[in-house]
Image 1: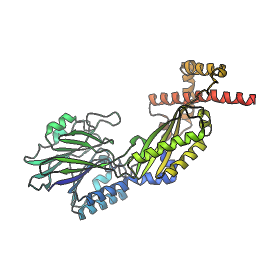
Image 2: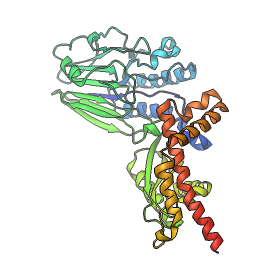
Image 3: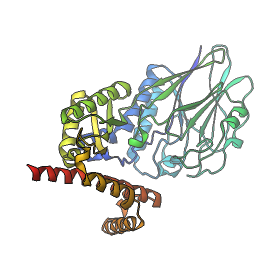
Image 4: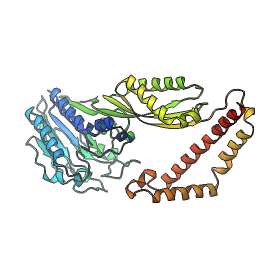
Length: 425
């Protein structure tokens, strides 16, 4: 008889959402409640699959939030597991260590929360009588700059040993350094499965033995795009591990880039976007998809798209509604003007002006300094809490200025050309 468990992490229950999705009231409600709904689905799956255990490898909570309603919700879900005879094993991650609720909540007896001592806990038995033991160490503080691996006990002899660790592994460009541990170090420790948490993108770092980062089960914004899942693990009597992904997300964020090169009319542009949305709807596993659409490429529509952004947004949202279970979070314009056939020579001085702007003006120190002064004046008028939206460091500010300059310059020639055509008429 096998031993089966669900492995998840990084639920971040009731995490504050900073997505552009919040601009739409209905969509905001969907995104805000998604983390709780997904945890309910995880419990549903555990009960349906009659697993022996649920493993949560850190970050049930989201930092120092203080809502007891979150804790009561979590306790109620654990009682559902208890009624089904399913145990839960939890390690505290860096966000859990910041939460007052972590220290106040009392779980039902089927839940084991590991402390910082690394003592193994017997979790069950295979059909051949071989025992299964869980190992875990919780964060005691929000930061763990050194490896927690030395605190884990050796594998229990003649048993299946499963380790739970909240870690940034050897480091990630998008995550701070938490309890770093290399894959080679995990392999050398001798456990039969490592249930990891912390990095929000799923990855299987080793198959023999499995070292699995399940990823966040419900994305919260466009930076956590794509299908999200939990991992169902089956341990056979022969000690072999089987892994299955289960997609439970309420909403999945997705970036879509639609190339408008060669597209010259509005209807064709809308058709290209519809095709991209329909494909995304088929490929992404979630009840709903929330798309950030980037229109790019050289097209005669460039100026009109920028001029009629409000109309564009409304028409694309209507297309998304027609696709079904699909939302447009925002539309980004990365298009540039394309000279119509036979008109390049006719542009004459305008084409030369465009080249001068791109090669000389935008790159000049004086122009960049003037842009920075304009941005500083704008920043001084903004509340401090929203200033980071324009960049959190000098590099992000430079990128914002470059993008603004390019977009502004790309609109000048089409506008001048349109005015010239009007004068000719």
